[in-house]
Image 1 (cartoon, rainbow, N blue to C red):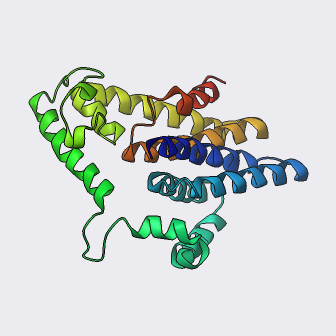
Image 2: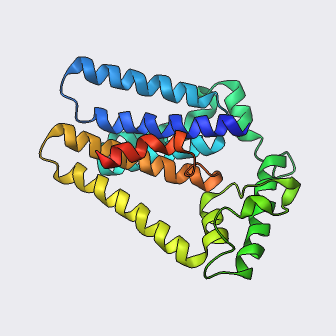
Length: 229
């Protein structure tokens, strides 16, 4: 359901935060506790059955492997080859049901595609400034849904190209701030906070491709606290 997708987005981004943060912990006990927290959180995320959260985790682990720990790229490659023998049956079924035996998208996935097609037509009516902030929910859409199920599309529809440029600048600033702290921090604590925030933001950005996670303070509030810190 919708609530489980929101929970999954939160779990995925903070699993990645602690995964990145743990890279710079020196005390063995603290490092093990952090990795245990990551493992428990990833396990919990699996049972939310949120495909968006699965994708967010995979992409974020890839990013972490690129910027810090290349061993993760090998582990990720092995996982992608063997995942069907590793993950629990219900999770495997949830992923495989994205398309049916005829190669067609299942109902909820097709619903998203139809929403995006409809949102494109709405965007083209006012591409520069959009149709107005928070107005999409009041229109008539596929299956009477009030969300685009993609935050970036929602930004384009409601605030147009101008709004999207502002959002792109904001996201670039957040990524630059966190990555800069990771690379240039004078203390391992700061570098860990920077890397953790960087990969958590990557997870959040991917999750928002398959739903609106950004406007929920319950999900992003902690990210803003980290950015402020």
